Image 1: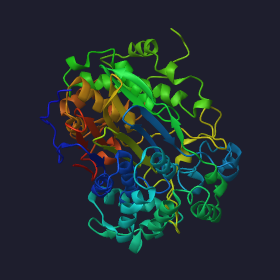
Image 2: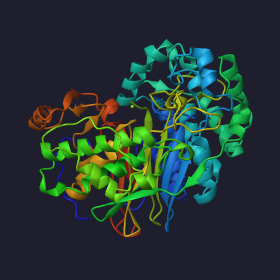
Image 3: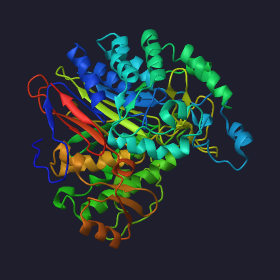
Image 4: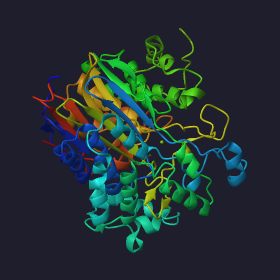
Length: 540
């Protein structure tokens, strides 16, 4: 790809060119990964060290009680890892209706009954055992050091921390863990998390066994019981992450790979499959026609995703049916270039929500590339923090339904999931490891940035910096304040109910990108990091 490296958008970032690179949404986490590669480790070692550090330096988005997913190129082939949490054995629709009322339609948004068994730590162990070079305990060292000694709070993280305080301050363990001095830390103020340092040490020393059935699992069971929950150490002990084959769709001579359901990555594949039917490159990159087409394609994809995607064994249709070329062509014909529409789901059987997530990526000169995402969901997740080991627990259980259907809660089941890493190949060879954070913004971000790179030849950093839109529901979209005003007005004239938003973190996600420039041992990579967060791409 011959990118145009002239960046037409306002940014505080520049591309990083190196043979070994790490890109995350916090500089200390990026440097933690780089330390592992300087120590002789590979991209997997770097990604795990960065992920562990991110639980400390960006707790508004993830923690030691997160879920995660990964797509990695081991130098020869692509692998997927699903480490999303499963429901405790006690969870049934009746369990929640007894506790929260017969008219309840979903598990609670916050609190201990929103917590499924967290999978992130299991993903670190599984990746290390299968692909890592360094001892697992070494990978926890930077995170332990940061948690013990503390770090000075950066601006974007502090803003989100302070904003969450009023809602979460009364939840079990939250104030003790995250409100030192009875308030959120200020920008530039030292935050230490010694309880999490204890948790990280126990994880390091036991290679994760303390978490899945050992002392951490028992501590969480006790904490849960004290606060009215039902999750047990046995739920943790029985948990295993799942290696999966990524699903894929071709676009403009490249192939986008996503993790299969129970996640929403299929939305990006469907949207691109619809856009493949249009000559995007002939339309001005920031003009109304290009943006309108992308919005409508995304709406069509979401209509099917929200109707059909769940735990694979519960789905009415297969991913292959949803990605069928003829089906997507029929969906593309529904787009009216002059009018925004509120689409309903289609029938793939016919033969004729705001998040708290971190994404990071790493690549090394041997050719290994890692696309990794980790999340507590909804900013600080459940708001519950086990005090002995500093386990800030996700609230992924809120993604279940109590109503009959594919996503109805059941013991041991995984809910519909929003976090999705992505990977791009060409002719079965690696091209780019990337992701964009932010609940339902994630597949939208995958699509928007790829269209900019593949149709318009914008560089990864420019595609990252460009103004974004975000589809919500119906005809409603948010647009970033930096978007061309004429385009925004013309979108509104076509029926899009537009709201201009200044909060880029909350509404438009943030991405990290590593594009392979050639032979990784010679040319290396070009890396980008999104200015919407406090992050950094680093390399050597």
